[in-house]
Image (cartoon, rainbow, N blue to C red; front, side, top):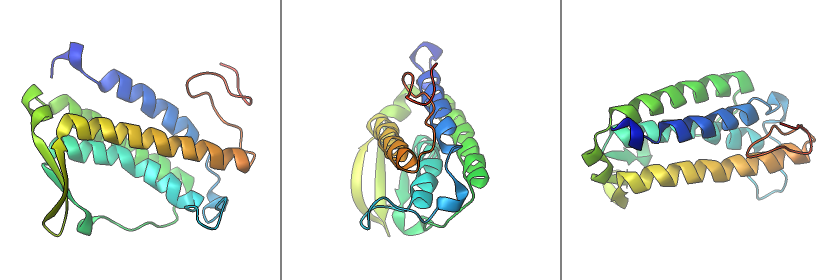
Length: 162
């Protein structure tokens, strides 16, 4: 991919911000949730740690079969941060290896061979980053409710000035 067209610098900036937030997740609050219908904090943090791996997989594989996806568990924060870091490295490498034609190739979300969604990779990659940003936002709300100081994301927070 032409370096001038590369999304990697933007991706790395978003992932640096996401990592700072993920580091703050209190391991002892994994089962906490703000409402009975909400996702537990530990599962939300695990999802945020996994999502850069979705980007790596989308950039390098033609499909994802949901039937093969792992289930949620409760992991310690340091394990989630390590997983996140590896997934970010994998995503950067996979994006860097893409050719322009790869962005227009169709990518499929499947379950046991049945196509649930198909779209050009460029759309799916953008969707994954947007989806990750959404869950990062949820994570900020969870942490605020637990009175965990929030790091700057796109500017200062009430807890930290830039």
